[in-house]
Image (cartoon, rainbow, N blue to C red):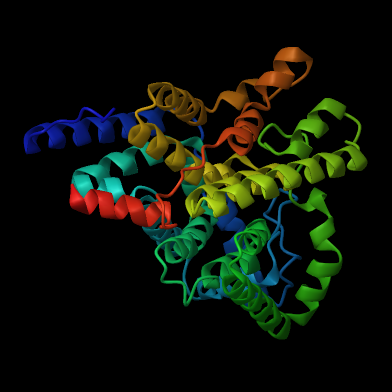
Length: 399
């Protein structure tokens, strides 16, 4: 089944304008603007560090308990913000996120973009902008899309055979935030030792650089702050769509069992290792990356809704499989998942997540992520072991 799209330039322009209007109207009416809160944390931290002699982890947003929670290397990368005003920093962050979003679309929807050109890019960008994790990433001024773009750059290099520099993106992303560390495990399971060594060396080198620049902050982060999830936020908060979040909401007002959480993490990691190994054996590296992104969201102690941009590769795999194999049911299911991820559905249980409806509804994104981990299709390459991504490029060019 192939998508039915306007065949004339005028029809395509009208469709894009209609989609853009829907995106603008939706984002204007959904009251989820975050006022660049996380970016204000980054900016305040760097400003206090450089101009007022404070420590990286001492700063708190006025009137709150929230401060910087990333590894010190992230603060080192953000040092240029000390040279500009807050509004300039916001503008630069917005441009960087736009560039990262376009890079993510280019990797995930590459074959379709080559087929439909500007039209495909505009449609994909509009659809992307409606997703709640993407909206939140922009309105918080978050870094998730930038990290996803770095990781997908490595996926692109590996799937096209140009892997000399593969691992650099994952290593940098892992040094900025711990979530991407799991992708190093993916490289090992996929039998890409050179890329795994590169990623590890880059992450270690960046972390070592931060230790030289900010030794006290590095010591504090790796010995204290890393283990204190209370610095990040309340585990039971409905935005925490991780396994730990599910357990915390069930246990509230008590604390969730660490033993139960550890067991759940081990089970999820076992499923991930099995599924990634099968995807790598089928030369479907993008599915392996998608499975790893979903798993990282599940096992992290805190996975805010904006962290769920790591599910974008899974959505791309679902759409690609549905179109290539003519699986209408899969495309309908993917559309349903997409609508839910646009809807801010979990916030209906913001005040009360008790009861059966609370258990099912407040954890909706977790159930989606678990479903992707278990059921995401793995696409088989043709005989000869040509990676799926490269096969699709050849197919599009031939058409």
